[in-house]
Length: 51
Image 1 (cartoon, one colour):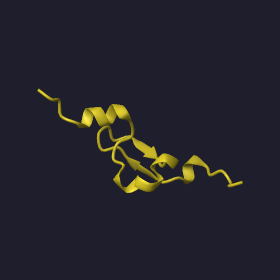
Image 2: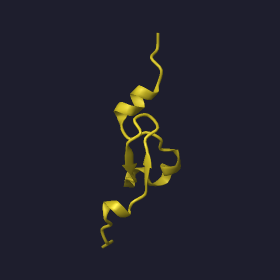
Image 3: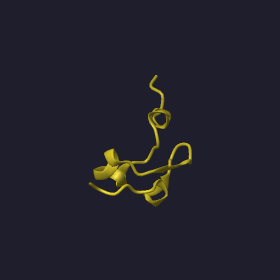
């Protein structure tokens, strides 16, 4: 079984929308370089409103 890592040891970067830091998640493992926002809420705020 793999050893658990402390959250402080994981990679982190700031969200491009809200500026808060967010840490690496396993589901982002293959796409970490392209992840720019921390949540669905920030992803929705990032897109311009359609008229």
